[in-house]
Length: 111
Length: 112
Image (tube, rainbow over all chains, first blue to last red; front, side):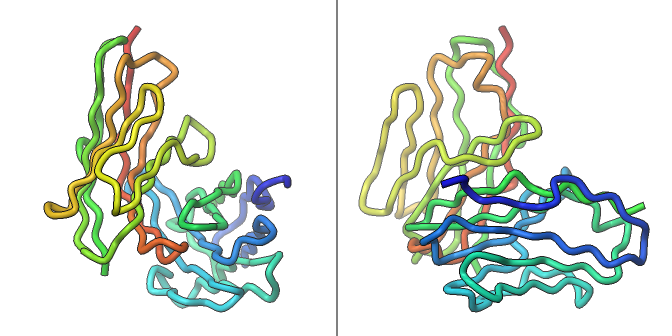
């Protein structure tokens, strides 16, 4: 298995643009988490899914953020419109029996 | 909801010394306590974990201890080496993948 795959690895966009981050979890893992990492706030849980169903989105900072998981092998995190304070590394992690397997992350820069 | 506090935020030790990182949590129903290591520019990766029915677990130079009564757990690294330099995160979850919450991280520097 190739592990958790995220794309793109790097994204630079202008303020106000829509940004879509993608994640392919490990097959057979029934939980998927989206985290945001910054120096100031560490690893923040944004949302997580169980069997493709969103369970807890209380960490999503604003309505500008949305996430979907249309099937067991794909999830997206969308920011519309993006703002400079959204700049961070976004990690997707698939989880089995509690252990989180992280993707390589997407480094988002909003200018 | 669950709250996880991690201390210290930064730790500097001499090569060969021991390092200890501590975490406390609030939800007594939490039953899975993993530790992750994140090297510069890389993803967090699991290094050791403990479940609530065990008080201590060792894997070579690293060990984790759990005190359920006091709701705290610790990571111990002995005989530290420069390659141990990284950010270490504790985490807490109800197990089975439920809502894993991370501590703020400890940046460990091991000086040669």
